[in-house]
Amino acid sequence: MKRLWVKVDPYQKKLVTTALESGADAVWVPAGKAAEVKSLGLIQVVAPDGDLVPGQDLQEVSITSQEQEAEVLRLAKLGFVEVSDPDSARTALGVLEKGVDGLVVVSPDPGVIKAIARLVKEASPPVALEVARITALRPLGMGDRVCVDTCSNIGLGEGMLVGNASNSLFLVHAESLENPYVAPRPFRVNAGPVHAYIRVPGNRTKYLGELTAGDEVLVVGHDGRSRSAVVGRAKVESRPLMLILAEAGGREVTTILQNAETIRLTRPNGEAVSIVSLKPGDEVLVALEGGARHFGHKIQETIVEK
Image (cartoon, rainbow, N blue to C red; front, side, top):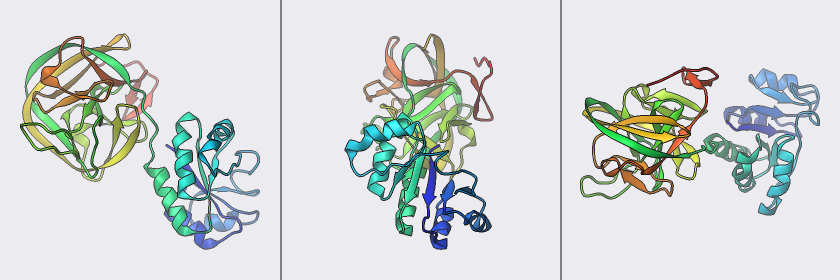
């Protein structure tokens, strides 16, 4: 999860309050102001007398153009990146996947602080996707499957990561395509049965059956780019199911989906492929991990899920 610091130098109480209300992770203030910040809210303080001392825990750089990305990348290993407007923040967020830990906002405008805070909090790290080859498909009986309806539209080549095991998830495509059976519903992913895992922000998983309105799920594109989306509703209905088996990374990976033409996985080029047309040898995208998970958090432990 990317972090956001707000630099308030010279000190202004209003800007500190704005930082707190915007969900900042730390406030950077001049010497002698750390105690006052602590009195306004529980937050980490960057100051000569604060929790972190400038010059020892971070490096500063001002971004004014796209051409400066190479310098940002070099300094990323040493600390945060300083930005003063939403455009420079977007530039920095574009290279965060290569090592930048977070942003330091430097602006006297509360509106700018809020705008950059929204950009940071909505950003998600990329997901490493791999190619899996289908080995078998098996019709099953009835089960309770979950449609995840979000408060966002999901585009072509995008979907959600779902699977029988938390460390091997298939990219299930959103219902954003035209088809002769039902109208497109680009806000929806027909994700799978209630027992299945789904990736959510913060590199965590949940069971599909746990999702409720207001939760967040991770929307992932075929290129690995990701973003969070708010769940509007999770619709559970009894439907016929299909088991999908594939091989990826030298191991078997599986998921269960509703047995219907409108349910699609995602090919490496982003094309949606209906599960009823899949054949052994076809390639689809999956996200693999080592280790296992406990209560949705990644852990280093051996767990076999069949």
